[in-house]
Length: 96
Image (tube, rainbow, N blue to C red; front, side):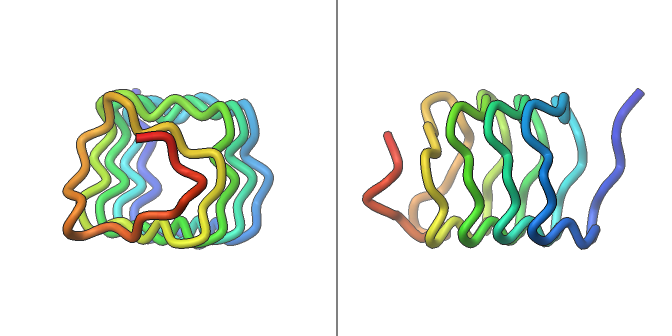
């Protein structure tokens, strides 16, 4: 079953260690959210607002980050994620 959260307001929520693999989070507001250890593999995060989100230990393998705002996000390991570096904001906290 696919989780549908497109356009959802998840600002500041604690979603740590939640399985959101394959979820549709396009255009979702995840700013300031706690996503530590969250499974976001193959999730659609296109145009999502992840500004200030904590992505430490989150699995972003195969996720779609096209147009996502990752400014101020911490701990993001983008290895294996589908991203377009011309459309996301790069932070010194990211491991590319």
